[in-house]
Image (cartoon, rainbow, N blue to C red; front, top):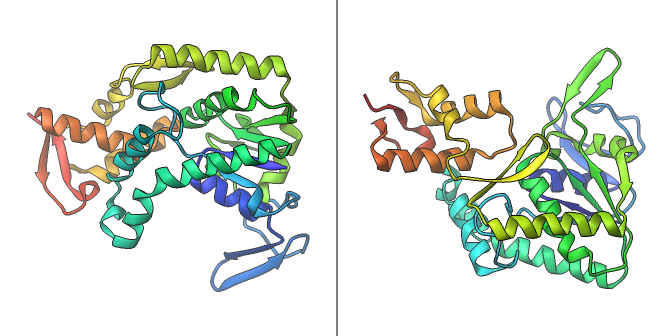
Length: 295
């Protein structure tokens, strides 16, 4: 079974979930346990998912932003991803920066790998959520898989799960650890040919509108203007200087819309250029600078 996810961290967790040997830190030294063992896990253990890490495809193409009239593996999309990651403070580190700049090429190769699996007749399971990048990733994949007769299924992340007397909410698969993934297999749903065609058609409509941004509103993917999320910046930013990283953290922590920190960083940079946000104290990394509303 080929597993498709739309973010790096969730794909990494899935690779661990499909690996017989898991390595991780548990309150100190590195530990190694074999799938099925009784070694303690920080979260409820639901078993492992059959297969190997090679069967995991990561399509972190951020299809909720930018033009979507170009192919998913286009030069435009690669350059867009590079410009997004260029806002990351870690881009200044040579090795990490090189890896981030090559992310677009990596995802394009992952897409080619997926097509190869489809041509070999492999079954595909798509893991998506209501986070805009994931819903758009799922929709954008349907025009591709509809050309094949393979068995296609999807696992949508539930809004919450009940564990004993506790209700746990989720917003994206990035919040799910490796040992939890198998517990969500009960949500797997085979996709009929009609459903795949319907999602592909919806993506076609969105491509025709081709807005700079797409958001999930009332369970629907809608084309929205670039400043759609900007109200959150103005909600949390005041005339009192605050570190940019903390501001973005407040926005993400309270809104939990599945929008990356890089998006808000880009919009903040835009308003700094517009003169609407003031840099009170600059820093080498933008996230470390002190900013406030220009009085």
